[in-house]
Length: 420
Image (cartoon, rainbow, N blue to C red; front, side):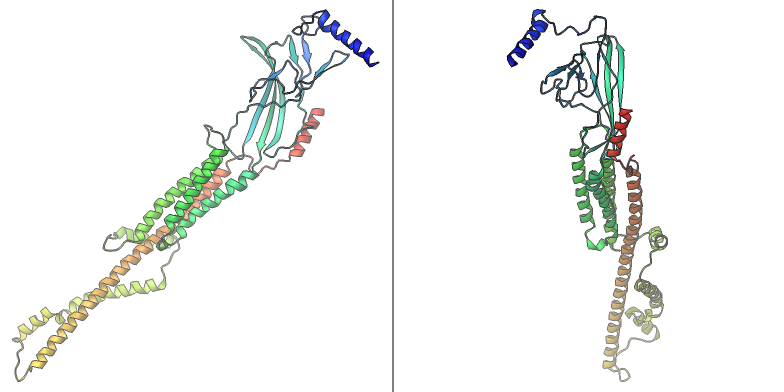
């Protein structure tokens, strides 16, 4: 029985393809002017190729058999995976949404010889991706008239959206924390000597994140959203280092190297502390009151204690009487005792003058430190405000930030739409 069936099958193939010299280039239609309709789906016919292929492979990897029905229907389902190229706009990465197209058409037949039927993509066997979500899709049949003739293409257009949870937890949240950390540089005391170290360490960490983003994304003419935010943080940190250098310079200024101008005192010692709700400690106030008393004592010293100076003593004594000499009325030991008192008075006057200069030196130095502290607090508020506004304006500018995607519900909706 098997031999009998084999003989008839061999004779049928001989009559169809060898005896009549079958030409595979001739279309299987009864009339040459009748177009050949191909039922098109994601399982493609042999006459159809993908136009925008990415790997340059236009043929299936495995040549499967063709099923021929008695009605004339020919079914060929090759197990092939086609890779298509897609132009990606990374402006809002990682909250981007892309529109990708797969174009199919025949390069050798015009619409009068080979036409396409409108069908929908079958998502029953679709496996949910861990990187992209399918938002929507549509099928478009394009009939193009050009100088080279008529041309028909079937375009499957997919709207896909990137899953942003991975990038949010590994890129965006660390970047926001680093940006906030750069603000804390202004809360660190200038005397600690670690302001520049902390700023440069943050700058290095931002560079590491920039390198990671450049390796994740392909080269493009557009700047991604995450790169824009990192660049904003990078520039902000550069300004932080620049302002920190100025703060440290002010903090270590002395009266011997710099002179504080009057407007500088008015702005940073009078008005800005009130605006920033800063108040100098009580011991500083008492110190300033002591300095004011010293200024009053200085005037009193010029007026009342001038007679105790050696020159004034000699002048007054010379005007009243001749110099003292040893005599029965002024013994020699009394004259020597007066000279010792003059030396002691001069030494006390020198020590008092030295202490006054030291107090004045310390007062001016403390003023410079307080000015640096006021400017530090001012920059803390400014950079905190700029960082908050820049972070919100940059990250909230991206669409679909708070949109939740239920992939299973979308696929079920697409399948129901196809069935209807």
